[in-house]
Image 1 (cartoon, rainbow, N blue to C red):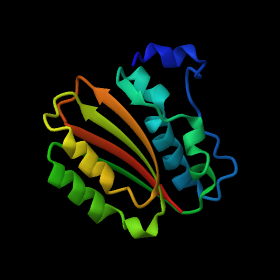
Image 2 (cartoon, helix red, strand yellow):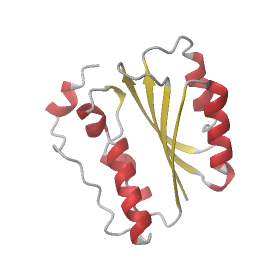
Image 3 (cartoon, rainbow, N blue to C red):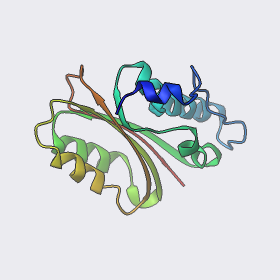
Length: 148
């Protein structure tokens, strides 16, 4: 997939999430806004990632009005470490909705591990993005927004 094609469909040069209807306090709203911008495909394109599955404005519409949000970034080179970080940071049973953006190194030798990480979120209403970072020294960089 050619990342240039996303810019040809009219994505804004700088994505700004609309959280005007958010019931969250200002601090959490600001952090959510930054996390959404970070996960949006426009940011991934601007960083030079190969966007395989794009997260666009519509993917964040429900979280923008949620009153209970958890933000998480997990990085590492070990499948077991990534899973452990996710499971100890999020009480997944408490958050039925998940937006997850996988930013993966092209140096991952066993793509099955990505499927195994994704399976952690299978019992949830999950929206997924996927990018490849050819410059990364870290195999797995996973950004998560969990919400009710």
